[in-house]
Figure (cartoon, rainbow, N blue to C red):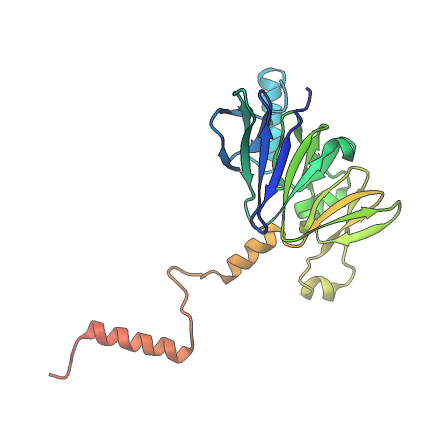
Length: 271
């Protein structure tokens, strides 16, 4: 299926969104729940599967939806089509603080592998699939890096990364060791495998886990400083672990508040 060529503009600093400009008849696909706003005249159609092309009947659509389900995404995607006679815009918002990265698949060899929650939206014609790591060790210990999304086509796709993003160009044989959650995307020419950190003390007390992703060039790698799993774990650790709100302040302050509350509830006992 021919790819739609779309214009775009990324706005914002820490909480970004991307505005995609559609010519008459052009369309974009987006994750369910990612749309921020759209101009009147854009038709919205939710489809079963990835919506990239005619998937060959019910079983083809079922296969496409199943691929998305394996990566933890919704069974459905939404297609936004410009049904007017003028250019219109639709915007997609990032789900948490970070950066939106425009990926021109045509300039990246036609395929990009990314984290399973990184895809935000794309021009119509981009196919969403899964990339399962082939090495047995990666399957057992890869964690977030085991099952990833594969974007195929020659159009524009937009992926979201947490925190600050760095792009590394790896030369043939050049290797970088990365926390598995910090890998945003990479080109298929990059070799991805899991490596044990090497020392028991480091594994138990280093805070980085037992395994790292070993990425060897040639190819392009995009890394993020704040994986969503790391952000979520910090929020969970700081949240109250029991019902109600967590008391703040000193221990004496807590006793003082308890005494005041007891006096109010107990009334005046001097009589």
